[in-house]
Amino acid sequence: MELNGRVALVTGGGSGMGRGTARRLVAEGMQVCVVDINGDAAKEVADEIGALAFTADVSESAQIDAAFAACIAEFGGVDLAYLNAGIGVFSDFGEFPDEEYVRIRGVNQDHVVYGSRAMVRAVRARTDGRTGAAIVATSSIAGIDPSPPSPLYTVTKFAVVGLMRALGPLLARDGITTHAICPSVTDTALLQNTRPLMEKLGITLVTPEQIADAVVGAATADPELTGSCWVVHPWGVDHHEFTTVPGPHNAINVVP
Image 1 (cartoon, one colour):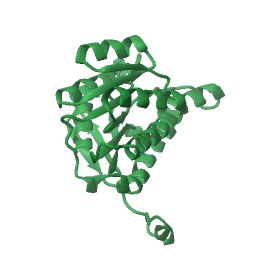
Image 2 (tube, helix red, strand yellow; image 1 turned 60 degrees about the vertical axis):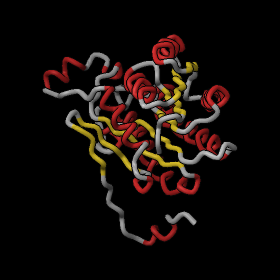
Image 3 (cartoon, rainbow, N blue to C red; image 1 turned 30 degrees about the vertical axis):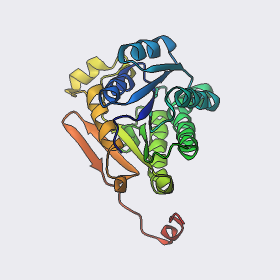
Image 4 (tube, rainbow, N blue to C red; image 1 turned 180 degrees about the vertical axis):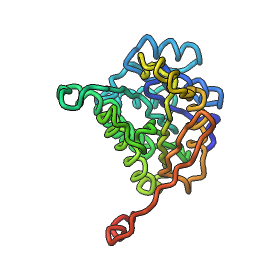
């Protein structure tokens, strides 16, 4: 999909990877809606790049739908949904409270489900004749290689990978491609107080700008690559290949 002249909605756009990608998408010629639970942060980024700001708790489906509606009202549609908002938890697995699991699932997993649904509805409601659209969701390297220190984070990020892989062939008929971005350890606020540990381990951090490169690459990739995972390392981006498990179940995994 050609990005110039199109419209993007970015969740978690007030900081980190979302902010870096919103800047890049504007540079690519897109009109952008910056969505964040921190309204001041969303407005700051939007004012900087000439975008629309919208405040939303993305774990709530009604607020996701409202963000899409505002973007469509302002710009006439949405061509790229970058579903990026995310949080992390590192509680003892035997002690975490229910509400902590509900919260991380809501932000990391449910928001991608709701955002993808809103994007499908937006594309199907088009009346202007334009074609092509993309859903790009931030998963994590922990969505491919489990992270034992944070199993709750791992389960939500595996879910994002699974959803993007399943939606790829399903949404091809709508002209929508789907991709998961799986960053290695990235320099964002999610690291909190673990930066000294990263330095001690000699881990080079991925930058938000490198994530933006991956998002642009995924959104403009050949439609045949829909359902792909893009692993972002400090040295570059790898298109991750999954193996297919042979068996009779494959007979029902065909989109009619």
